[in-house]
Length: 141
Image 1 (cartoon, rainbow, N blue to C red):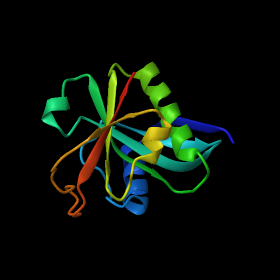
Image 2: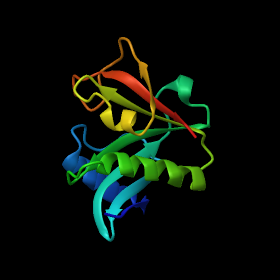
Image 3: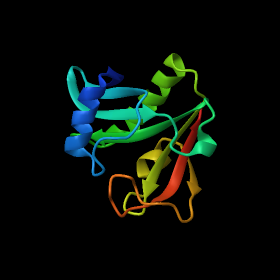
Image 4: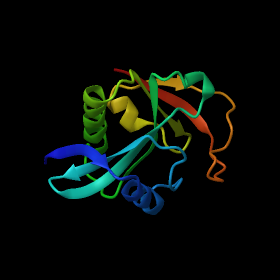
């Protein structure tokens, strides 16, 4: 299975996230990456400015959504790895961040060698969900 990650339009990523992500479409957007198996779109990642003011240093990108429309073993980890490589080649930022909540333990981030940082307190996701971020995951590139 050949997996490729390449830019897609915001409206395409938004439609994928609205249909397949538990939080729906993201807030804030710099660019979107599609996950492809040859020519078939399997999922989307959206990247934006960090929501945390303390991380908004011009050098950090936040992955605001990542959703796959199919389940395949190791697909998420492969897609994350290819996204990091794409960002290294095409962007200037040197730190990537994302968040997981108590219902999503961050297995894909751990498998892709991102570093977990435990969070305390936190506010509910803006989407109206009662979930709170429990971990921030970071990758320095």
